[in-house]
Length: 254
Length: 334
Image (cartoon, rainbow over all chains, first blue to last red; front, side):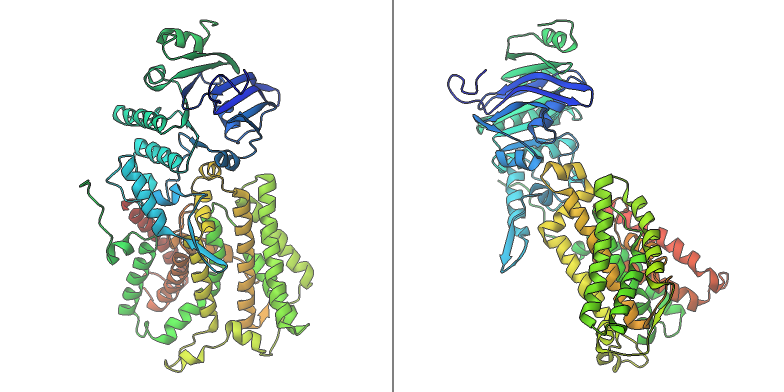
């Protein structure tokens, strides 16, 4: 599939990605494409390779072979910082935020706003607090102060903050790694709503999940991996929930 | 609109939620207690004595605390204090060059601290183990280079007075007081590194790396760089402590500084720094060092009936544990 598809360019196109860890073949010639302004779900059982594929996209791993195109241009993503600079923001399950630090400090980690005085610079806490406060309001968290420690937030609130952070910093592609796995029903609802809001703002989203029902709710398309290979990419509504489950477990081949 | 705004914290709330609340509260309680039971405990002679006993530990603790907040340990600081003291001593007594002596001490110990960091980054072995090894390796180097000889002098060049001379501007107001310039160095360095920790980008990265290394990595923080820098600072601060030490006592032997690493860790932890990293304060470390020194002095002077004076260390140990419990309780209450 060429990067210049019909109509708009896909935001990311991964071509023939193979990843080996020593003797273990984690990914075998996987193609993965996310269209512009699309919510793409990445499905597969444990060990299927979803996490590995995403880590390659976010610069944590380098592919053994294969190419990555971002917005039509070939790129070499060598570190998480580079991925972030391209506009790829990730919300990991446990790793997104640092519990002991305040919301503001987490929000601006790695992108801190500073005031300069000659050769000296120091953190502009006031501007950062203000920006954080606004984002918290936008994402619907009204009872928290930006100087509160993240550890006091619920799982859903944390996901919301991480997603809000990605949007604030102008992400083009938002990657969510099992965003709803540890959440209550109400919090899951909120995160799924966020995903739709994010899409409305023009971003593309990749979300990894086990939960096929969530896929049905928000995804425009879904890619299924099994044993390091791509089983297929399907559009919303093409398959039933049972079909999807069968493809994941291998009860069905295609 | 109309969403409830969290109110601005008043001064008291600001204090009680700061990381320094627990250590300061404990210190105040202990000082009050001792003042009641020990005559002249709050005299400036007594206070300056306690401060002097705490200053050297406090200086080492600055670097150790910064490193601990980023999640690593440096057990070799005691040996590095000796190396710093010897280098400074040699530079002033043999070469008569204060500048070379100071630079030499700081550069050598900073370099050896950096070596700790490089070994850590390259091998992935826990820093506790690495610096446990370098504790002995560096101590062995001290043996070798000094030939087992101590360095001692009776001279009083200006440089010694600058680093650890009597602070007579203050002492003249208080009879019997012995405040020293090393206190100014300690306050200055504490303020400087606390500023770096809480008011700079780098400081934010230090907290992040200690609190959740993978989370920090995901946000593009260079973990290796942060840790190597902190190891280097820890080494250099130990070197500075060696300079202060020799400036005061004008003598250094091969065993100098042994055991300081544990004192530093105790002071850091009592001062609110988490052993597991991610939280702490440099001012807290200073309070921690003061607290332990106050305890030691006070317990001996107080002559508690059922605790013979030579068991004073046990009281110190109990209080360390109690202080940490209090710190954790306050932290979890928010």
